[in-house]
Image 1: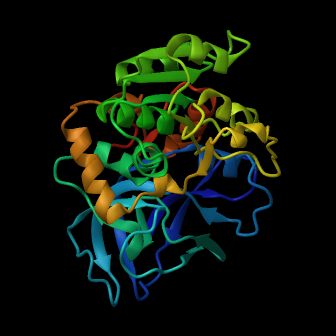
Image 2: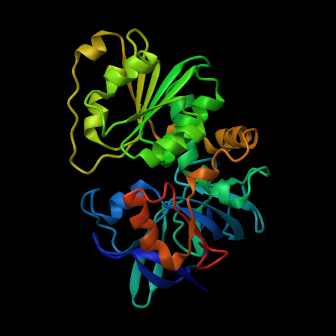
Length: 349
């Protein structure tokens, strides 16, 4: 059996489409027919060579999606053929299988525990979660990365409490998910910061009560203080070291929290004023929003279901697998927030 897939063959070149031979399933693996796959900045960094040397080339990509289980290997009990599932890089319950190797003519193609840039992909059992019934496949794909990272940064990593003020730096897919979470959770104020006016317009639709054009002001933290005062929680979703370095200046003393979510380019460094810590401020990291898929994905789906259409603006358009490089370019330029590769309708726009 073969599958069409988009491969990273070399850094800084377009992804290459290939027909891969699917290997026999190992213990703990499942074969999934993809419906949708998201494209996020992590893949963009990999493709553009900004995550450092890549010893696994050529390899498959993609780590969030939705689909239907076609076949399961020995030992898989969490899902069965016919189940609708969410695919995520965030590990859930189940057997943990490190990856698989496809054949592409005479070449081996590497793949991790989950990859989604292909029609049918072999996935480790613990990267699968049953799709919540209330979400259609399109929205469910965002549960693989954008939603759990953004929602989790607020609710889990950031310890958000209703009535707090929240600032979100970066209004891309993850930042907008954080805005949705804060607004839905009862924040007193949600302030969105970005350099693109189009993203700020969308942020208001998602629940931002205030916005700041970071390209038009010299002191973002000062603008935050002018509009809402120091905030209780700040989320960094830009991947820019300069933003990471300054985010603590926007949160209150004695308990203010700043959560770093964005991925910076390889070899980047951050310098922080130590006096921020002397004020009792907290700088926190986040691993996928510290989300637990089997517990949190249904909870996040419930929030989305009670706010109909709240995540729909995240996706500007769908792309076919053949348009994967256009999707990557559109993500990089900001022309779309969260590209979705739609496998059920090739050429869909």
